[in-house]
Length: 236
Length: 236
Image 1: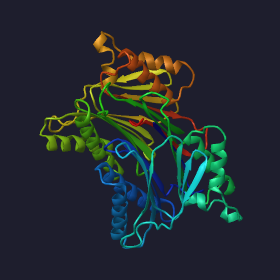
Image 2: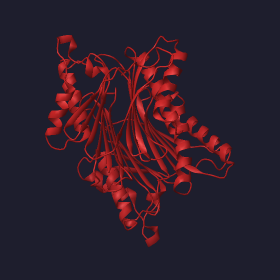
Image 3: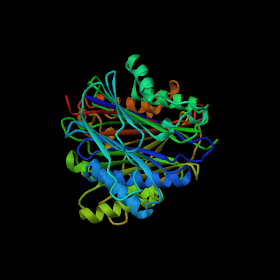
């Protein structure tokens, strides 16, 4: 099998920095983890929080700590450091070579979508952000890896897209339409979902928006790992 | 301006794990850093070392430590932990929004290539891997960001490609040929350089190989950050 991840991010209109942080790391026993945190409010303060949370989680994962324990540690750490005054959402998506599963860890009211080919399931069990209470637990789902498995994770910029204009994005329907098409790459899916959200916000995102799409496919290519990044710079 | 990074990696033929580690992280003041380490020997032990080195560097960078200091810290740390018995190469490529420069930090005998449009410079000043001596210093080059600036960094799998068969890859010539073509994406350049090296090794890489290509371009697109990953899994 092979794994494809596509990530698309944009910051809130007229802010200097996105408060969302997304990072991808190798797991010590093979496979990878994608960690997404959305710090409370926006701009520099939010970025500081989401960076802290993602750093904490990544350090623990790289030491072999399991995802659920890493999420709890990040929660306790933020709770202690900021005296229950600051929250952050946290999602961890991990593909582990040893367990041969996809582990979805969620401390985020925003749902996670799972598509098995064109069959979509919404994971929307109540889930709290971290940092506000002692002992906050993540919601964890573990799925067997199989070709055609697609997961979509996003920050609340998607949830609130268009709300200022009385509109709302139906992510499931957008995803369904895309999967019915041909075989879209995760990057195409992430880009299309983000574009849709920006359109609902009339071209001026009313919050930071991040979309992560992970897809498992049958092995068709070579043994090469690849990573591409595109980053607009604030320099003329 | 905008920044594109392309990374391509393959492990040594018939090993379970690459000893090279490459990770990309956001910088706290905007921009990003790519960190590449190649741990001594190959397989699990090498992976352990390169992961340790990259983790150390990334943690420091995320705290705002400058690249040269992070490289020295990683060297002292590996030297102390492994009693001068284990080495690792280390390259850091950073694009910083505040300084508006590209900083190239090198603790690696393998050279780094800089292309300014089609003009290629080879950075091959003597540079030692970290971990073997007290006080090892990196070689640092700092360049102004400008459209057309391309940097190529690689592990010694490229340097030794074909050596078993009395052949050698001329990376400058390969790069020149590609840049003369049209406007290749960094991912295309990284893929082509890796493919060339694998061919020289007759399809069986005699070492772990990693290639990182970073390119600065004029702003032509939107405000969206993107990241794509492709990972072959050892699962049927």
